[in-house]
Length: 81
Length: 164
Image (cartoon, rainbow over all chains, first blue to last red; front, side, top):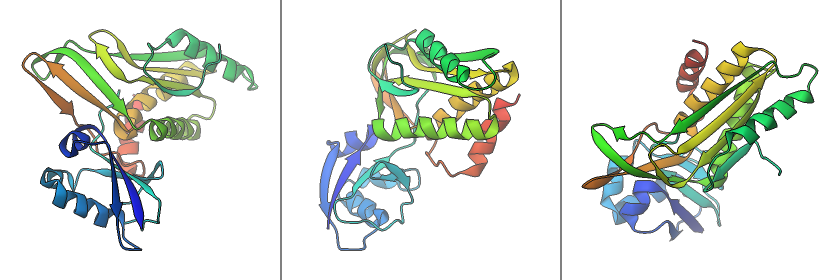
């Protein structure tokens, strides 16, 4: 299945892009997706316990199963206000 | 001019239109506003020993607007007579410029203050917004809370702060 990845703030800086496309096996979770990204961008590993996940513009658990066409955002710790 | 309750924008914030907005929202209710509390967060000239040059704010906009709506819904659960407007600015902001504006209306002052304080605490906890600080000789992403809207402990902290 095809997944669109959105990256923000420092994660985007590390990856050098705000958008990525990834192909994953059916039934894969956002956590599986994160692990594949962390292989490509080892600096992501320091964020593994700190990120939040959103699927299709809603907060979601990182262990949620993804579906073809989903848009998954990984969010570093927030600092609005 | 039409004003929306929950906004992420690159334009300068206008608290007075937001105050009018929440006042009008409350006019539709049985009791009109007896109190409007507002909050304006502005860019500080100093952070963690750095002399701040400017900040670049970034948001995951659709989710940020939904987070503001969620915060307002939580506020209504806690203080049913309150109405909130939340606007957050993104892009480059210089020292003294407003990054976030909140207006909270209620028939009673205690609830207006509580709702306003609750909103800013929750924004800092769960709004997908980031600030990138630029100072002489460098820059750094500021990273605060891991956004976790269902974290009840964090929510209770916000409630506690709101009721002081």
